[in-house]
Image (tube, rainbow, N blue to C red; front, top):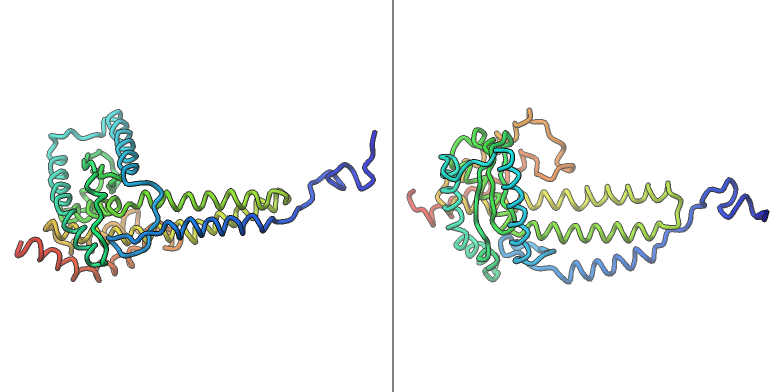
Length: 305
């Protein structure tokens, strides 16, 4: 039997693994590559004038959205939760959707001109559709490419078609702003950072690796992912409000709507820094500040309506 003169086996005394060094050079290489890719792919979002990064083409988004929508409809139909197309509520929701979608080209052109950008054309390839799903959840969504669903639980909270239009305008705005593609770009960056960090700590003790990876995860969550989500919600509020106003719905209904939304679940919610959505009070203040602009859109497209 060969005895290691330095201790019991290669791992040193007790056979445990010694803590290795942190490979800083791997993180430096990653930081350089990430910066080159992130800033090199930056574009100006014509709807907001802000810098944006996209992880998929507009055509890819449409395909992904259509695939996800088929899955949603299949699941809802299997559960008996999909309202038929001739149901009164479905027809009402479709009517609201049609009015909003009809104003997408005009609002798109107006916002692009406001930010001195070329008018985007990605929405021209959208395959617009909307379904109504029986659920107690007060929610709606618009997938990339224009496929929408409204849950029946939204109706008693919204209380009127103006408020429903505000919610649907908000969801449509997510698709117009290509937030799904932007989240994909963000996720790719985070995943690359996790891989690079995993390689950098590969020689360290397991406890050290776990501590560093946990710190990285928390940093990414609170420093990038959650703020990114809150900014997307604020952008969708702005663009969606203009869309609802241009479609001749009353934008002022947004304020009481989000007041009611804020009271769901007893008004209990995590602090803003730990949430993907803005604090209700901050959201309402932002919407109130946007009312003059929204009213201008309504006056332009609706006159005295």
